[in-house]
Length: 442
Image (cartoon, rainbow, N blue to C red; front, side, top):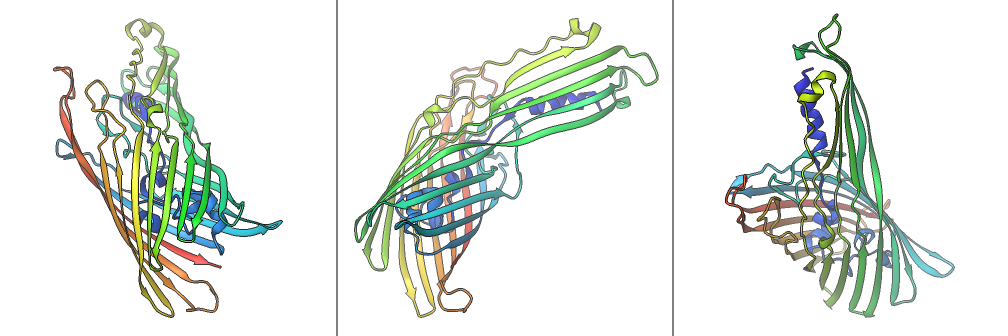
């Protein structure tokens, strides 16, 4: 193995750049919610309540098992050139179990999301490298949530629990002999000890049935920002085989400490209104606390022990990290669902929604290039329910489909410095999404 390749590997891991936030915040939990603009703080009537508002778990009438799959294809461009951001795909399994204890109506919910491309993903991008900060690695995360909801009265319910997101820590060690002057003569053994760790954050919600046709909701998801700690150690002799080493017991040690990903604290208020028996309208307004987001680029620590070569090699000084200067944002969402067909064994619902997410990132005029744009998302979908079609499942079997398109409005970034190595650029793009959910009730 070439010594230069080993150093490249070390630098790549040391400059690891994280993804931000969690995939369900980005794409929605379940196809019904995704097709209605994600406005489900008061409108969740299935196991998606475990994500949007755990208080609503107490209102579910039957045990539900939902299996969802969704895919998102980004087309994100800088100066009209596609950055090649990966397609994001994954499976979500959600279970909601209603019950009653001591006369109190309650519900329990569990949701897990598994990306089918990466269990973990690390990219080697510095703070100066232009990238779409909220999309780059954001969907490539394991997610788990466990919640409980309790009915305080016929009108009021509360709920809460914990959500979990993953981070990465570990050590990569190479030991043996580094060939010199011929690097192809190296004899090295690779040892890796990498752990996927979790960080928990609180989830809470309130539901209130104000009138027979109006339900209100409020939900909170806590901030979480796990740290990734990765080390690369190369240890051994430098020299040719079968000869006295030029340097004995040489070592190169690099350590990278960086923000693994960032989920802002989120406070959401929502309403669900039944305008008539066949039409429901939902609306949300969410505050996302992006002002607490800090520069995610890696902080580097290095140490070299190369004998007589030490005086010729100076470890690079860690670059100072500029503040990200993100700001809080308000996100409005709205959705509608109407019953378009009802027969003895078949019910069909049509759905549509819209969401506007202003960018929390400032114009990138300085050394950083954490690109983000204002986002407009239009969605639509169908929900098909089958009744009395089998004696095994007495409750309806449902199949939901969602389609969504997110437009990242064009944004110009003009650098203050006329000699900035990146220079001025503009950003824009699309994200195309499709999702399907199979719901079984018992």
